Image (tube, rainbow, N blue to C red; front, side, top):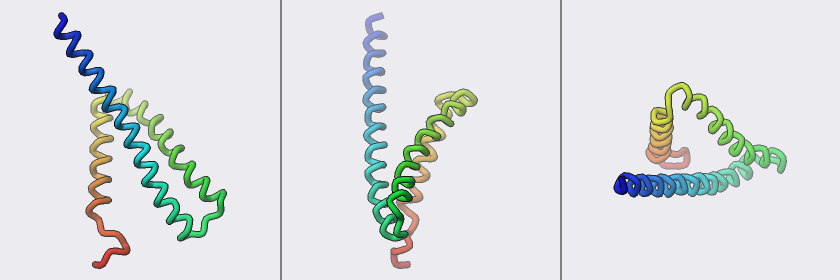
Length: 106
C-alpha cells in the first residue's frame, strides 16, 4: 500500500509541475503576441480604444475557449479533448514555423 501512495504523490507532483508550466506558456504566448500587437497598431494606425479592444479580445477569446472546453469535456471526455487541443496546438505551431511570411523572399 505504501508504494501506491508514494507513486500517487509523485504523479500529483508531476501533474502539478506540468500544470504550472502551462501557465508559464500562456504568459509567454501573451508576451509574444504583444509584440505583434505593436506592429498591428503602427501598421493600421489604431486608436487607443481600438488597440485596447484588440488586446482585451485575446483574453476574452481565452475565456470563451475555456468555457467551450467544458462542453467538449462533458461530451467526449477529458482525454480526447486534451489530445485534440494538443494536436490543434501542434498543427498551428508547425504552420507558423514552416509557412513563409509575406516579407520573406520567394
